[in-house]
Image 1 (tube, rainbow, N blue to C red):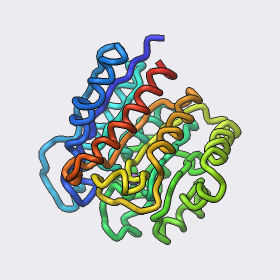
Image 2: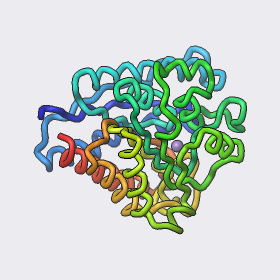
Image 3: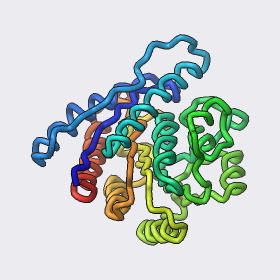
Image 4: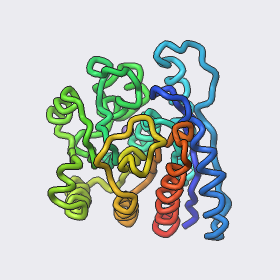
Length: 295
Ligand SMILES: [Mn+2]
């Protein structure tokens, strides 16, 4: 098979409250992926830029975000059309409007595995912060902001969404999760039932729903803040790095993963460089698993 990974940069910060996440894609590319790629002696790694357009109207970044997310989606569409694997480097989690929209257009009945401390399913009616990175999943199922919904030509079936590691979910989000029967495996569930049991159950359910395709969205704030200070909305009681790497590995081994995001690393909030080391471990693990299993 001649499939190859194409990196898609989502240089976007407008979905969250801090500048900085727009810097992560280039840092991850230069400092982490280029060296691994050399080590693996793997084909040349291509990338496409998106998200650094000038702001016209910065009111809650609405217009600017829509322009940048549309560009990012086009770039991901292009990677799929070329028969390649889009590996999307955020950016804040708003980049997932684009990655999920493109994925679901390409893969009918696809599943979304969302590893995150938050459920990111607020709507403009429920959100307190009005930051778009807390809302992509509401648009993915067609109940979010009407203009952001329009990024989607098709919506994701709510029963095909799997949240893992949640521990900061607002009551209004819980209502949406319950109303639409979204699968929510909280951190409490993970601790009670065990991570492997939950991963097995998700993989089994994806099979039962005859969904042969997965988009994996990895928010770095799923990790415990001990490992990742360099992120805008850390929440305690998160995953160990090893657990996150095991988890992404298990999903990638199914060979059903068609696209993948890594989001919310903010180099400007990383005062000790420890967070960068964490990101290096996570990105390296994911990249090696992709190269070994999919290509
Ligand atoms: Mn998130």
